[in-house]
Length: 214
Image 1 (spheres, rainbow, N blue to C red):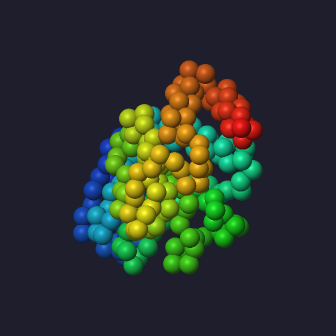
Image 2: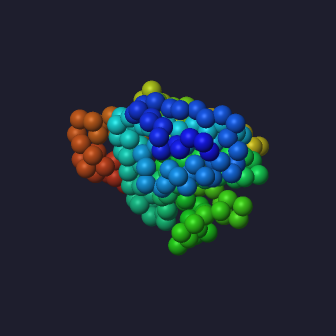
Image 3: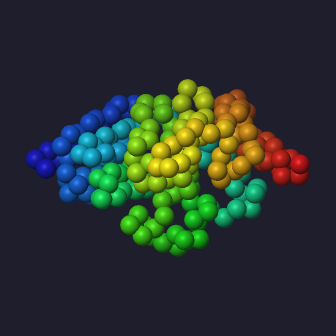
């Protein structure tokens, strides 16, 4: 490319759109940006979005991720988190970096792997997107066949399940059935802002244990 993407300054909370980007240019941009960066990317059939998250975005992501991890631990379910790993599929000309993602049912299939290839490896079982400053690219997750997508926007949690290649909003999680997570996750996220992270996670673990016992 004529312009080095490292010369593009994306202020926190803002995004930059680059159009008519070929797959080869997309791959080159990923290499140039490197893995250790704050910016997130989304690539959809020639359009590349580069977004820099706000602190509020990162706070919500971290607490919700910690709540999901605590839930999995209390349920004694093996899992693997891969954060904002780049998931891409050339045949679809699409790629995405979720705010957080979890391998749960398919954890054993990717256990120990340092590199993933969606041509042979499964996508994450659960992806999390925080819609504070950018929109969730639902069509990309559908193309990559991520079974469950959580969107957190305006203090509300939306659970989407993949059915017949498109998402359908659901009141229940595929990975955590029979738990009222749409109400509970925002509740404990809000609690963390007054009580702090550790106290909130302890309270959440007690709630999960009561659900297990009942």
